[in-house]
Amino acid sequence: MAGTIEGSVVSIAENGNIVSDISHERLRGVPTGAAVTIRCDEHETHGIFGQDHEQPKATLIAVVGQSGNLELEIVGLEANLMLSIQVGEKLLVRW
Image (cartoon, rainbow, N blue to C red):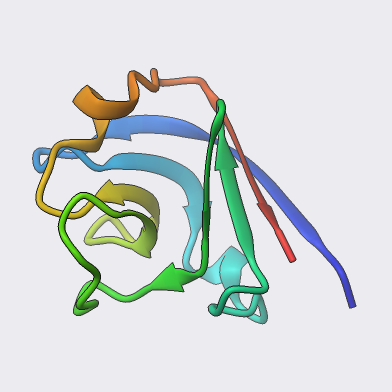
């Protein structure tokens, strides 16, 4: 069963993560593996990870962050500086 969730960037976290308005509750039932694609602007990643992930440095990932919402993170770097994504940008989760 395919699906989509649309949202937008609402803030930048202190750690540089890009915070969306897609809450943990809205992600209920969405697969977390490679079958899910998260796209924002021209940037795309696969999978949704927990905060305790062990992904390699400089990898773009989607996480359910400390905000309780879906966030884009570049491991070990500040995603907002690397991606130049601004508040208001659309974000799409598709599976």
